[in-house]
View (cartoon, rainbow, N blue to C red):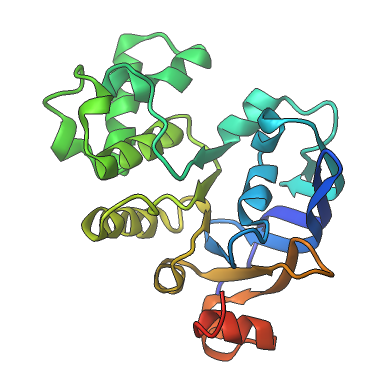
Length: 259
């Protein structure tokens, strides 16, 4: 494997919603231009973890953070951090498609316009490239100005990915992007992740063990028990996590013995 460069370094991260602890002492690297899967049983802190990486969790209420999350060397929880810029550089795709009630084109162009791009020629080019990069162009090229809400669930999810890609993020976070999709739509999302590998840093939360094994280079296993809330049990190369995990709890989970 080529030399690994951390895009994001998480150091002793503990996370609280109000007084409720959701993560405890998480330390790991998310490597540049690799795919990292986040797995574990429900309630173990996976979604909280991924939302902490671009501070989107702060939109859900009062939070408190201990430790550090460094994005190419800068602690993203410093007061001086521009959140709009951070969230453009670290994009996010949610469990359910969250499209705006506007056209396919305008959904993808939305973030570009917010960032100040108004030239129609440039918008046309970037929108087309983003939709192509999301493997959706052939399906929507003749209806760009029709409502995005008329697309199928799988198409809507890929359009959400196109919208995130349009502003050229360095990292793409995906919180169970296939959980509401059928197997064919899921396969297209997985093929898309594979096509972006090497160009983009991706972290994906998934409940699907086969999916984690198929799409990721690295895997982090989170667990929760009465003594340790939101603990990361093990992190490593995906082949090792699924084939020869060091921790018995990881082996039990990936083999289906619990969770």
